[in-house]
Length: 191
View 1: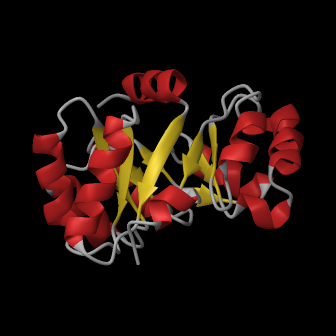
View 2 (view 1 turned 120 degrees about the vertical axis):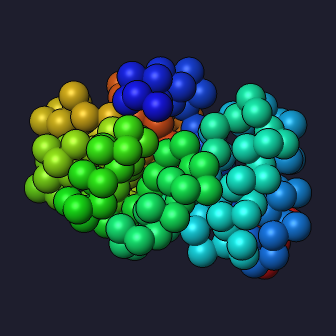
């Protein structure tokens, strides 16, 4: 999928449901629940139970949704994620080799970064957007607002502590989408 398609989907939906499940059946239930609630961008974390199988299964069950994965730490995991059908890829860190591997496969990659230097490094290596993680630990919405002045041309995805309450503020910033995983209703399913 091209970066243009990915970015248009992000701008349309503005949020990604992040699912981390200790049992595959819980991951499936959570994905079906968020999809029935209108979420169309769903990330199954790679450290979820049987993540490759779940991603493949959900692609078939939810053809109108985009299924991706995150918590990828190395090129081998990234290649396995692509092989199982992940349509977008998140990492908690910036790894140039991982970014370039995803770019060559034409799969959107969103590496994690925190500082302006890390964000620019990820962007310059070809990141589709940059995951600002862990955003709440460094000021949340005020930190993203501060980044927007010099880095407003880079699509940012704040992650780590985004709540329904803070999502309203993040939504005000241009080129900012968000990952939601702190909703108590998600936790009711899980671990």
